[in-house]
Image 1: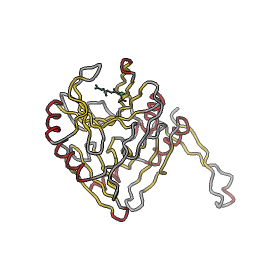
Image 2 (image 1 turned 120 degrees about the vertical axis):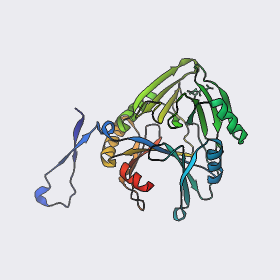
Image 3 (image 1 turned 90 degrees about the vertical axis):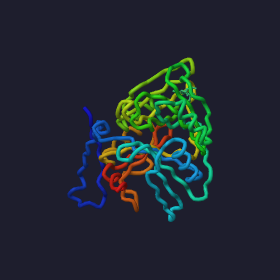
Image 4 (image 1 turned 180 degrees about the horizontal axis):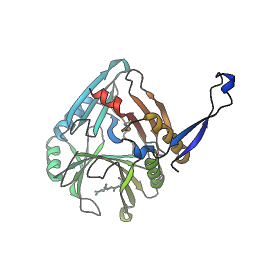
Length: 304
Ligand SMILES: N[C@@H](CCC(=O)N[C@@H](CS)C(=O)NCC(=O)O)C(=O)O
């Protein structure tokens, strides 16, 4: 059985004749798997919007897709990626007026960019003044060529060599303190599937790759578990991943139940964001990483 019933009390001011009724609402636990979901963008804070835009466009090869300034709330956003937001995963940078630096924390892993030639991209980034923190070469214990680069705010970008690249922005990596709990959460609450899992006892870590499609076809979430490490600092820089949904209310019902079982919590109840009218629901996973589910139609209207 995929759903079960939950009793909801009616408000106390309804007509007396109805007050004995209890509304039975069916919660469809399979909804996240049936829903029309896609990783849309990742949101994080930077200390200087122009500096980051310059680095991402000139060194990493992204395009500036759109920008908005919200002076009444004292912040500005810039969206960058390797193609249009309708079909590509992008970054949403947030600049808060006057805040010039943030703590990235030790729980955030990296963003990953796929490219056919990591060596060449490393040289290009170096020539643009980028900070290469791990030179190009095969990954420890494997053959895939990778490199690590730090952006001006200290966020790590992994460069990953692949023969065919659809959307270069291919991965977000976060560290978690209990991998099995995190996998269950992302499967049940978000409808993601484990597309790959690798245990690396030599280097004392396990990674699980979760996606709505196979790793080569869409951007995925990588969860890393380092043996024995159960907690990480989240810092103040990284914010959340945005995922599209056809129904934030049905999604929220499922998330609510999953948080009762596995931990985490809803931080913004489902509904339209005042002023913007895009319907969203936000929540934390059991490790404290945030996701926002965004109504697909409302999101497309934002792009018009
Ligand atoms: N301790 C690492 C575990 C994950 C890990 O080692 N990932 C691989 C890539 S899948 C890596 O960073 N390898 C380093 C290298 O090859 O230099 C972490 O928390 O990031």
